[in-house]
Image (cartoon, rainbow, N blue to C red; front, top):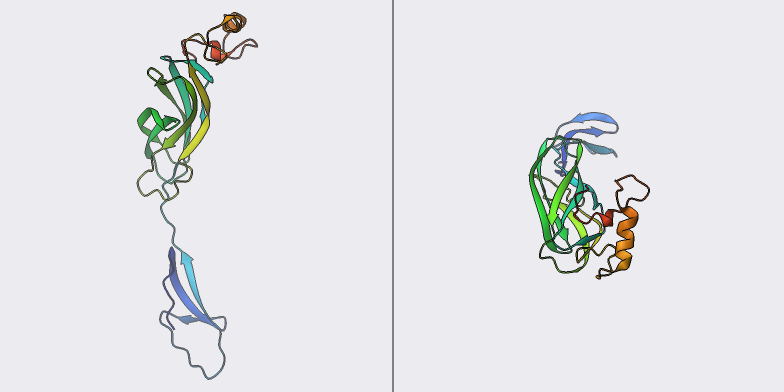
Length: 196
């Protein structure tokens, strides 16, 4: 009998009727019924696994031409320190890319990417992030994540209806002087996009 090769496993030994019986191939005298088992051990593979675990934008309405920040949580689920490259998309359009982020194994980091919305057409956009696969990465299912949506409109439009009206001034007045964490804070009223 010859134990067949099994992916990611290494043959160890045969046993016959519960007793170790030698290597591979194995010869057994069949004068009676015997039960033979091939024993294997799993081969430990070196794991490389980059992932995106979260994507957020601090506001969901922004004026065209405003610098917007996108927060991407990157994770290194592998066994080695890795150098990561990420790309943020608005629908299928590349919004921004950040390269050469070094991340130790088992760690995560929030990368803040700046995105200049100049030239982007008015409309609704789905925001997603993609971390490029690292060398020898097998699990790429967690390399992409969608993180919400964004309305790109004219500067001064706070409520996202593609017009600047009195209601926008009311929203701006209500948030005037506030900071992140204040009860009256409205991220969409941050017209120049300076808040992360």
